Image (cartoon, rainbow, N blue to C red; front, side):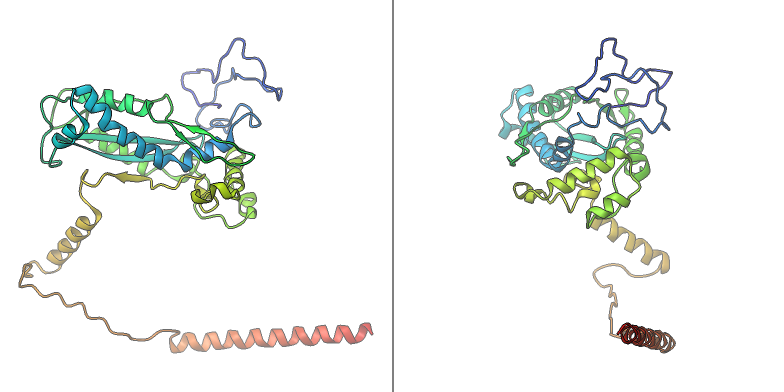
Length: 339
């Protein structure tokens, strides 16, 4: 892939790169800044494995599930505990963000936290450290290997996490080691709020026909990915992946932000807090407790147009009826003249 570089660093400098079977160079001596449209594009589109790209996206959820399952095993092995014994002592929680890179591939940013057995309020045991967790993250990710369903004409693909894995301990509550927790919050928020134009995602709406792919404002690389996703969605062996329904996200079916159950608060709790804040702000003396009564009675008022809008709608309907009548009479007159 072509990549954007800084400080005049060359894209893919290879002294003896040679050429692929399609006659394109396997290297790129040029420099690309962030505005260069070549950034994120394959060196040779004909060599690029577009089906594998789509299938990796479609199985990203399973890859993450396999990683989190492995994590307990690898942490138990590193600390000399059994998996059952480890689960009685610690709980692993996480929050992760899926970011579309410029090459239109999903990149995962995750905060993995080690709690005591009862959750966030319980500190982890002293016999397990952040370094143990970091090491377990690396080995657990490397051990994940899945296979796609076999499809005629496509075969079977093996899927795993890439080699670009950076696991570092975080610093909380004023500690001196690792990154600060508020810096991590800002870091994660950066990727949650990234716009579609920045992340090279396909389209912001589902695709209903191949015509949507042809008319979308997309790079050649992303357009080919969407077309590949649509084509693979027509294979009966891949029906469970619902690739055509998710062609606009290049086959990725997950949310941009997910977390484990006890990592932090829930949206239900946040909504309740917001409602309570609004009630208190509106009436500071409002009683809120078991004796409080909230009136929430609804009654049906009506539906349809208001009287004024009904007149406008009736006029439009009458105009349409007259237009259809005139058109039918004109067609009838043309038929009589042709005789």
